[in-house]
Amino acid sequence: MKKWIILILVAAIWGYGAILAWTMRDAGSQVFIYYGEGEAVEEQLISHALDGEQEQTRKMLPEITAWSRAERLKVLNPGLGRSEEADCIAVYGLKEMASSPRLLGGTYGCRSDQDGCVISSGLAMELFGGLDVAGKYIWCRQKPYRIRGVTDESSHVILLPAKEKDAMRYMMFTYQREAESGAEEGTSQGMETGKSAAEKFLYRNGIKSGKVLVDGTYFSSAAGLGVCLPLWITSVWMLSGLPGSRRGIRGRTKESIKKSIKEFILAAVFFLAGLLLAWKLELKIPPDLIPSRWSDFEFWARKIGELRSDMADMGEAGAVWWLAQMKGRLSVCLLCSFIGAAGGPLVKYTGRPGE
Image 1 (spheres, rainbow, N blue to C red):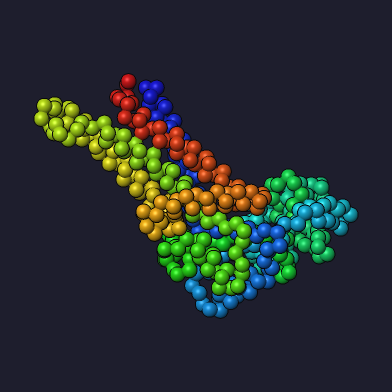
Image 2: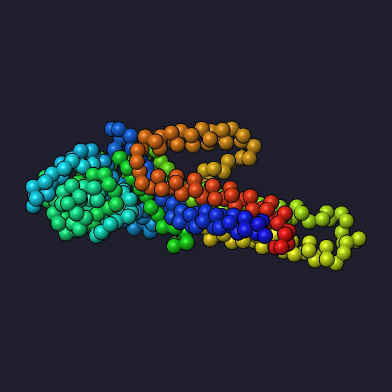
């Protein structure tokens, strides 16, 4: 009985990991780009690039959000005469992509909103003494803004619409997922990853690539593979416990044969469940992780070196909510998957429920 309790607990932990992997599916259609000091792209270049792509009637345009961060800008509440310094995030696109998506009140406003802002709870308390501030006005960057919403950040942060000359150091490309639309040329579907699609977009429009370019497919694929492996491992463990095929059915009792058939069917169920889950999670291996020749042994050494360099450069990007979310979810997902993989041997040696 104790073994069954442990088995149920392992299954529950693995299930939590599967839920996390499910929430990471959208990452497979996202690409994050970070520009180093002196490499930032002006907001107007991004806007003109999207307008140009629309004029060329390209079917699959990415949703682009870009932002920059300036520290210690003065924010004024003219009604109460209070002022406070805050980190200013100037955003082109969706403000929720540049900050924590959790709001304590109000909204982030629409993409085209040039007169609205979003402030953190810490800044709201300093300027107004409360959190019910949606609809009120503040001054920043020599212009009044109407507060649309309040985030749950305790630090002093304000999100404003970007100006044409603002230098964007962070950029997020979001393409439609394969399940939402058919494979199109120049998207993250089909034979291309989001990374190659984003690079082609930048090249077509004369925009330089960033110092760090993170393809969300790596996160979603790693999470999906992690939760599918325990099912396949369990299937292999169960098949390994079946009697050898050399003996056949001679000399075996009917009960032994029936037990082997049941174990084989159960192993097949686990294996097929893994395939079904992989399909539902849209699991795919990024093409740039597949060598052109399997005999190219230096490919993996080069790829590992590139991944290490990218991971080191990610730290320079600073506190980016999307990166932090992906890293955190993937770590927990893989931990749950590792625990779930232990369920394979446990299933094999559990025995009858009463044992």
